Image (spheres, rainbow, N blue to C red):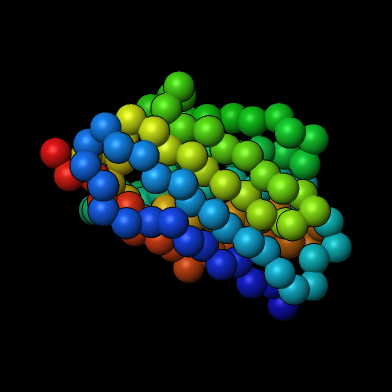
Amino acid sequence: QVQLVESGGGLVQAGGSLRLSCAASGSIFSIHVMGWYRQPPGKQRELVAVITQGGSTNYADSVKGRFTISSDNAKKTVYLQMNSLKPEDTAVYYCNVAGHLLDAWGQGTLVTVSS
């Protein structure tokens, strides 16, 4: 069984920064991709950023230049540094880890950006 533990969400003013972390543990054979998704209030879940085991990254257009995804493969941990936060970044943020026979989701962490 795989567990993902997220941390780092909270309330921040517009223009501020937060750093999310997600640590994976359990029966993990190999990880191919780690990523962050978010679900704004009343909307569907959407991709924020992903990073491959090799370090390739992909970002949603809405966060390019403001958010940075990184990972520590040895620790099976993925991070999301969020700068210049906007009220429209308010959402529940979920981490995802995918690999061989693996597609796991975190419990979600709430990020609220006040104007």
